[in-house]
Amino acid sequence: MDDIKRVFAYHGAEHKTINCYESGQELTVDNVTGHSRIHARCGTNFLLVVLFTSVFVFSFSAGRLFFAADFDSPGDYAPLVAGLSYELIRKAGQEDCHPVFRWLAKPGMLLQNLTTREPDRQQMEVAIRALDSVLVKDAKHPEAKKRWSLSRPRIPLPRRHIVC
Image (cartoon, rainbow, N blue to C red):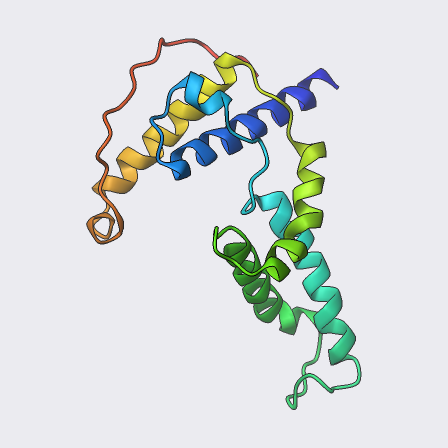
């Protein structure tokens, strides 16, 4: 049970780091500590939204009211369910979104209270280092200059061996 609690703490560290990055603050352990371990665009939230969206879509598709086309199996609806779910999560993650989107994402946000734990400093350092490496690799991508520029310097962190 201690291992899963540790995984949940790393999950919380990831969210805190992303929230810090998205707020525009420098990625330091002290700055990351002040942010929430709940994130609107979390994969846990996405899975729950997919579940609710599929129930909604399948409830209309049973009587062929939703589509004129004849679908053979529930898997035929997967692109629709995934697309709708993605858009709901994306919209709920925006600061200026309509309250309905926040309300729709609320169950997934509450579920994150089970799947994240408060991380320690070492776990936050690991999350910062991981995000830094992604940002560096992303900045080298040809499309990166169209999206954003990597303007902050990398934070040197002590090398430690992490045993999972």
